[in-house]
Image (tube, chains in turn green, brown):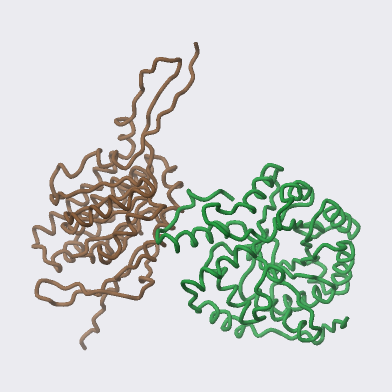
Amino acid sequence: MKLLDLNKTPTIDKVGVHERVNRFCSRSVKTSAKIQGLYLTLSMIDLTTLEGKDTPSKVKHLCYKAQHLHDSIPDLPTVAAVCVYPTLVGIAKKELRGSKINVASVASAFPSGQSTLEVKLADTKFAVEQGADEVDMVISRGKFLSGEYNFVYDEIAAIKEACGNAHLKVILETGELDTLDNIRKASDIAIYAGADFIKTSTGKISPAATMPVTFVMLNAIKDYHKKTGIKIGMKPAGGISNSKIALQYLVMLNETLGSDWMNKDLFRFGASSLVNDVLMQLVKSESGIYQSLDYFSKD
Amino acid sequence: MARIEVLKTYKIFIGGKFPRTESGRYFHVKNSEEKLLANMCLSSRKDFRNAVVAARKVQEKWANATALNRGQILYRIAEMLEDRKLQFIDELILTGSSKPQAKKEVELSIDRLIYYAGWGDKFQQIFSAVNPVASNHFNFSVPQAMGVVSVIAPNEFPLLGLVSMIAPIIVGGNTCIILSSEKNPMVSISFAEVLNTSDVPHGVVNILTGKRSELIDHFSSHMDVNAIVYCGNNEKQILNIKTLAVENLKRSYIYKKTNWDSDESQSPYFIEKLQEIKTTWHPTEV
C-alpha cells in the first residue's frame, strides 16, 4: 500500500481539461458502434431512486424494470445495479433474487454527510446487513473544504472497514468542491483511503456530473493504476440524461483509461431517465422511426 | 460612402431559439427573375426530432394554461404582426406578390389570428355536450388538446397559410412543428420573430424550412406526434402519410384546397379537428 502525499497531487490545467473534453464530444459514433455503445451503456447503469417519498412499491417497480428493461427487444442486458436508501435494501434484495443485478445503497448520512462517525458507521453496517452488495458513501465536504484532509481520509477508511465485502463507492459531491484542483485532491484521498469506486455526485446538488469533472477523476484513477497496478472504478452520477452524452462519456473513458475499464465492474452511470432514452434509440435504430416515451415503462 | 449591405440570415425556429439546421445545409430562394433572395436552412430529420422534443416538453403546460390566456396570447401575436405589417408586405412583394395582394394577405392573417383568439375560450362550449344515459350517471363530453401536431403548411399564401394552420392548433392547447411553404419560406421565419415577441411559450410553435420530400416520412411516422396536417395535392405523399401515420394511430388531416384567403378557411371546426373528445361518467344519487 502506497502512502498518499498530497503535496504530489498535481494541479489541474482547467483550460486544457475543457479543450480535451471538447475533443471527446466531437467523435462520431454511428451505426454498429453506436448500438454496441448503447448496449454497454445499459449494462453499466445503476438504476436509482433516492427520494424522500420512496415507498416499497416504488422500489419493487424499479426492480422489475431493472430486470425487464424492454421485453420486446430480445437479449437486452440488464442494468448493473439498483440503488436505494438503506431501509429499502431488504425489499430490493428480495425482488432481485435470482438475477445478477446488484443492490447498491447510499449510506453515511446521505446526501449531506453532516453527522457523526458513529451514526455513519451504523448506517453503513445496517445497509450491509440488509444485503447491500455496494455502498455509496458521501465524504464530509465541510471538513474537506476547511482543510481537514486527515479527517476525511480516516472517515473513508473507517467506512470501508464497516463495509466488509461490499464494494465501496465514494461520492465526492463535486458540485460543492468548487475547483478541479479540489476534485483531484478529493479523488486521491478517496482512492488511497480504500475506495473501490469514486463517484461524482449525489444527484441532489447542481451541477451534478460533468465531463471535465469526470475527466479529472479518471486521471486520478489512471495515475493510481500506474503507481500500484490497482484498478479503481468510476461512476458519474446525475445529469446524464440521454444516450448522446452517455456515449461521449464512454469515448472519454476509452481514450483515458483504455478498454480494460469498459465494463460494469469498473464503470457505472448513476441515472434513471437515461435508460428510456437508450431504449428509444435502440428501437429507433432498428425501426427507423422516432420513438415516444408513451411506449416505454415509466421510471 | 456607400453603406455595406446588411442581409438577414434566415434560420429556423425551435424551442424559442433560432438555430441553424444541424445539417449545415441550405437552399436558394429566388424571385421570378432568378435573382437570389436568401439562403434558407435545409432542415434535416434531426432538426425535426429536436423540434418534437421541444414541442412535447411544453405541451402539458400550454394545455393547462387557461383558455382565456391562450386567447390573449393569440391576440398579442396579431398586435405584433400589425406592428410589423409593412415589413411583411415588403417581404411578400419581394417574392412575387403584387402590392394589393401582399397587403390583403397580411391583413387577412392578422384578422385570422384575432378570429381564433376570440374562439379561444368559446369553442369548448360549442363542442361539449351533456349526454343522456340510461343509468344514474351525469355523463358529459369535453374537447381536450390532442398533443403535438406536425404540419406541412400550404405552398400558396406563405403567411396566411401558415397562420391558418398555427392559430387553430395552438388555441386549442396543442403544440406544433411546421414545415413552411417550400416555394416561399422566408416570411415564415419573420413570422417566427413575431411569435417570439408575443409571449408564446418556447416550443409551442416550431418552424422548419426545407423540402417536403425529405421530411414528410418523419413528420408522419414519429411516435411522439399525435396528429399530422398536410396541405397539398400530391397523391403519393398523401398515401405515404396515411400509411405511416397508422403506426401510432396518428390523426391525419389532408387539405387539398388552396383558397386560404376565403371566409370558409376559418372556422371553429379547424380547432375541433385537433381536439380529442373526453367523456366522463359521473355517478349521481339513486
